[in-house]
Amino acid sequence: MTIRTVRQSAAFPTVAILRKGGPKVVRDGKEVFGPDLNDRFRVDWLPGVDMSTKELFMSIYRTDQPHSLRAMIAFPSVWQSWSTTNEAYWGSTRFAWADNEHYLSLYNPFTWEALIVRGEPFKPFIPGEILTFNDKRDQPKTFKLKPTTRFDLFLPELVACFVTFQIKTKSSGDLINLRRNLAAIQSAADALGQRTGAAGIPIVVSRHEDTVQWHKAPGQTVPVKKWLIDIRPDPASKWAQTFAERLSALALAMPLAVEENPAEDEDLLDDSDGEEAKQGPERLAEASPTATAAPAGSSEAPQAPQNAVDPLLPKSPKDWTTFWKVSVPGLGVTQEQAQKAAQGRDALAAYHALRQAA
Image (cartoon, rainbow, N blue to C red; front, side):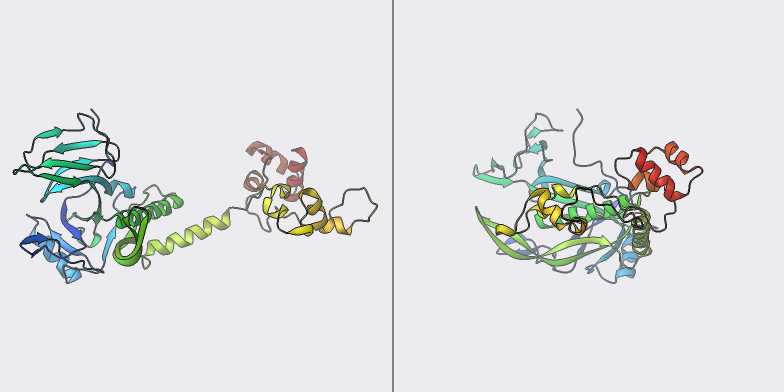
């Protein structure tokens, strides 16, 4: 059976988890999560990490609770380093795992009886579903699967180690914010049309305070201040400057093509109140400067001035063949037609010849 997962992951060996809170503390005899670090991360090193990797990281950042990290997208698609699954834990052990469609694995957290293995038997995942199991004292315990987001970061300053640092969060606010951040980075890479995609884009990973809506009760939301994870391209990098320059060049190289019928513009036809509001061609005719300039009893169509400049005609086109194909809607000009029309004519004459032929 082929298991459908959120993504096919790609990552170098993970050496640390970037967490938003401090180490766990004991409170009232129970071990609980530490306080939120707000604008910082905590580097939680995994067991067995090479000491040289830790020393290199500390020599660069001087702390294991940095405010931000300089990282890089290591793959053509940002989604190759991203995953979101729904998970439930008993202690530090995951006993339930599901994608957005069905359960991938499910065990009884107290007896470790296998209920679902590799997606079999099929059990649909229902958001908000509560799982109930009896503990060793035969008391019912309830669990709810929570979305867990992971994103692998490649730190170029640790390139000699070829390892990744993994962001892990269960916050729905982080999930929404990270998905938007990464989608914007991927769209920027796609806009440039580079063969390498998002690979090599330098990014800055930090936290910023924002207001999120907390669903306190059914039908009741409360605005709450939260420190969310933020990922964006490094504005001081050469890539950011090149990105802006290339986008500007692409925007200027493409002529503007407009194909609109003013008679179908609803905002133009209904922009007044009372008796002043006139609909349809009647209002457009009165608003037209050529119509007001014509004699009252004339039935002839208004003539355009002989020296009028065609608004679709660029001031200094570099490639007339491309201009005819792109900027004249509905002509359907092929490459052969454009080249044939250009023979023996200047650019303006060929342009008008193509319009008359259409």
